[in-house]
Amino acid sequence: MTRGLIARRAGERGLFRGCCAGLVALIVLLAVLVVLLVRLTARPDLGGTPAGPDDGGSPLEIAATLAGGVAIQLAQPDATGAVVVVSEQDLSTLAAAVNPDPGSFTDVQVRARAGQLWVTADSRLGPLGVVATARLSLSFEPGGTITPDLEEIDVGDQAIPGFLRSAVDPRGSAAFSLAPLLSGSELSQYGLECVVVVPYRGLELGFHAPSASSSPGYCAAHPPPPAAVTGATAPVPAPAGPVSAG
Image (tube, rainbow, N blue to C red; front, side, top):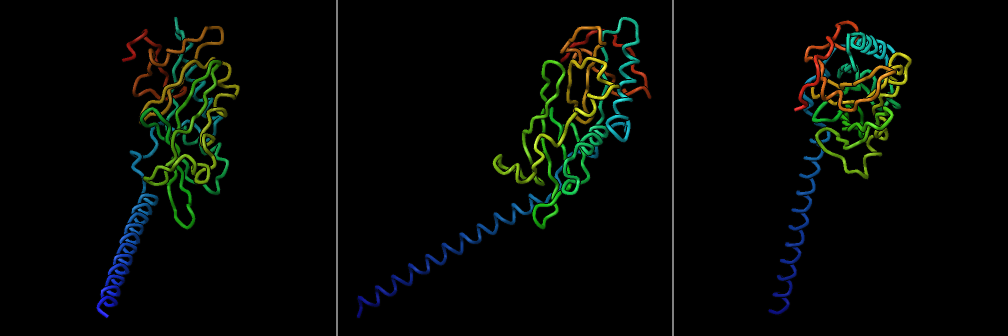
């Protein structure tokens, strides 16, 4: 009888331990899910609205404004090239124009941050309203082709693992493209030779005259003045000469 009582109590202690372990695991799982839910639905800190002038409501209008700025600079005596700034507002217009799924991704905005372009859009993850952010780097290929490369996708403040990115945002690198801007007749007449992401401003694009040779370091050697406005609305003075890239 004593042995049976001892065995029964030992079984009760084992059952109690098992129940406690399961309860603790459930609490930990719920806590993780709550934290994940908070991160997914958070509004990411992107550092303000897209900056800079609005140079047009379409890629063609922006291209015309930029081409005017390039023409003014190349018309200066001894000019060897031109650099114009595509503002964050203009980049946002370009991203909205190439958005393949405007029903699922709305309020598309682009910001230049840490050498990347951050393309954000309001979207949904099941029943949750979220902000999706595609972080893109730009590769400049010989011949003047600029290719966006997807580095990371965030939902809220949570980075999404690579194997889930296509399920969260199937646009991938197609979330942004400069092709509609650069392929038009306004800018395609010039040779594109460099591109630089400028934090909190946008993109610097360097061009040379059709008869001139390419100089890939032109953007670094000839940065436009901080207050320079893209396009012909504010003429950019001719470069005074190469300056240190550092």
